[in-house]
Image (tube, rainbow, N blue to C red; front, side, top):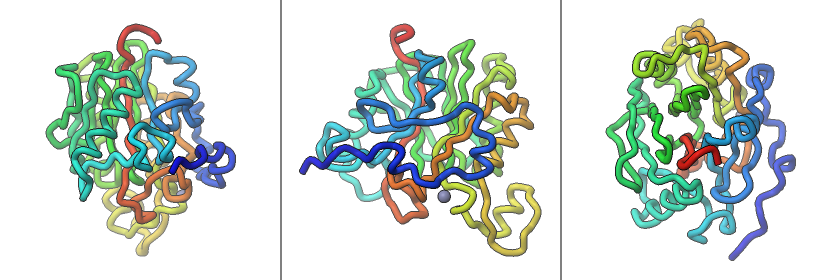
Length: 283
Ligand SMILES: [Zn+2]
């Protein structure tokens, strides 16, 4: 059955802005992209960095992608037929006109791997939560379902990195490792980077215990209280040397916004954040 297209953005957006994220939204407004795959993307980057391929997939609908089997669930674990998984990842890669895609099992650690464009297709890298590349045509991907996808772009050099950041990864230093990878491997200073913190569970929905607050070197609240992972990442990026005006955050909450899969919301499915340099020139 073909259903009607997804509701307009304004209808499904609802009151999902977190005060912390919204106040810090440095030109990182996201909108649904036109065409396949169903996704939201950073509007200012689409306009100013046309060589960049960036976004976070949404559930879509049966009309939203090619396999006609409903939602665009891109999880890589659990009971999903391999064929369906491969079909969806191939659809994602081809719809974005990229030659290959790299993704990994994400152990919530600090490892960031640099990738080169190799054979076309879908590549599963050794376990890691961060990917970096300078090769056009190679799409970086992380699967997310409440954790924060962190987009890092060096626009002058056209280098990109994509991180998967939950509280464990943040505590392990994934953000700092990602930022420093640009410096160590390519001589790019943090103040040359653009950072975007994508759709994730918001500070109102994410109530976590004292052990999480302690792990992040926050005051021990003595009881479970809400935590805004994007606000923490924003502050850590600024401390690592990224100028505040170059750090933006999504206003979308994966728990509240029905377009996204949410782990805490009970979904087994996962969306994918993706980032790459377009193959073959500026367009
Ligand atoms: Zn929320």
